[in-house]
Each structure stands twice: as C-alpha cells, then as structure tokens.
Amino acid sequence: MARKRMFDSALINQDNFYDLPMEAKALYFLLGMEADDEGFINPKKVLRLYGGTEDSIKILILKNYLIPFKSGVVVITDWKRNNYLDKNKVKETIYVEEKSQLDFDSKSEKYLLKNSDKTESLTEVKPKLNESLPRIEENRVEEYRVVENSITNNYSTIDSNVSNVTEAEIVSDEKVTNQKEMNIETLQSVCKVLEKEFGRPITPIETEIIKTWDYSIEIIKLAIAESISNGIFYIKYIDKILYHWKRANVRTVAEAKNYSQRFRQRKGEEKNKSDSKPSKWDEVRKKVRGEQL
Image (tube, rainbow, N blue to C red; front, side):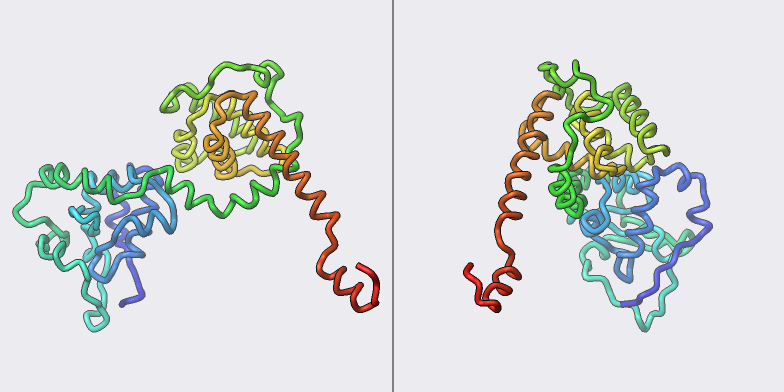
C-alpha cells in the first residue's frame, strides 16, 4: 500500500470548502489519510479513531466530497485529483462491488456513480448510512475513555463549595432535564459561561459537543464548576461528568450535588482503607527483618 497521501490546494481553496464546518474539513483530511489506494474508506473507522459526528459525514456527502454506498463505505470523489500514486505500489481496493458502480470522469478527475441520479442515490443510501455510522453518544463514550480515570480520581477532591452555583440552585428540586435538545438561548448562555471561565472562545467542535448535553444551564453550571474547582479547563472532562450523572439518572441540581458528595465519601473511604493496609514493600521489608506482620 502506498504510504503518501496528497491534497490538491486548488480544491480546498474554494468557497465550497471554506463554507464547510471545521469538523467536516478535518474529517475530509482524515478520510483522505486513512482511505485505501483507490480512495475507499469505511467512515466508522475514522470516527472511532479520531472522533466526530455522522452529521459531518453527511455534509461531505451532500457537498459531493464523498460518494456513499449501501454497505456504509464511501469513496472520496476527488481522490484521483488529489493523489498521483505510483501504479506499481498501488494496492487494489477490497471494495470491488462498490468500485464496479463507479465511472471516472477524466475531464473533472472525479468519481461518478454509473447511470444514477445523485438525489436518488442519496435517498436510497441514507437509511443504511445511518445504521452503519456510530451515534454521537457512542462516539463520546469511546473518545473520552482516556479522561474517565482522571475524572474518577478527581471526583474525590471536589470542593463542596463549588463556584458560580447559588444556594437557590443547589436546593432547587425542579426537574431541569426535560428538553430533548439544547435550545439556542441555553447554548449561548453555556458558551458564555465557558468562555469566561476558560478565557478563550469555544471552538465549533466544542459547540457540537455542548449541544448534546441533555441538561439545563443550572446543572451544566454545576458540572462546569466542579471541573474548574479541579483546575481542569477541558470540555471533554465536563462532558464525562455529565455522562456519569446521566447514567446515574441524576435529574436535578440537588441530585447532582448529592451524587458528588456520595462519590467523594466513597472514594475517601476507599483511600483510607488503602492507606491503612500495608503495602507489598512493607511486607517484604518485615519478612527480611524477621518482624511480625
């Protein structure tokens, strides 16, 4: 398999590419790097390796940067325009059936579907594409696994007097997670709080993560405060806190605070047991000295 991958600057220096969301642009480059020598790739591989959402893949399809197939595989439309690979080193794609459905336009240097209307093709493929691509929630679980241990360790050190959360919010029993999707006003308020705490603008990719938070601003502020109290200015950390709360069926600010307190107590008890138990080195040292264990 050829090792080098290339991109035509004339292609990406166009208004169509400029107008793509940042995540879609990043995924286009990652798909180009991970595709086989003929431009075919299963987008699940890229989403699992690097993160991202299926919506960005769909945007690339609708903008004709990718051609989808019923199998869930896609091919990069401008692959041959981007890449001039040594024919002696090119390894043929394993997606033979998908390749047989394509023509190549030598004038535009683009892959085209044979005798098929683009709109019909997308309509036919879309349900299969939805099945083959992982959901946003699944992506978050896999993408943020690296910070899960950090959150578990730091939960035990969260101060009970979290910042930016009023006493009225803490004792409130009002259900705050009834909305299925974050509205614009809540999104703007959350981003404003985060930008103030982080001291920097929130990126488009971070905004997409924030949109998936199925909580009101009150409980999100509590999660932000817990992250800040640990000196962690990281969207993924906050996201994982909210993920743990969701798994524990935490639905109010009061429940979230009680959950954190119980978690700290449990971790504190475990730490005390661990500190009181002799280490393996202590046991070895005593055996060498002939001391009574």
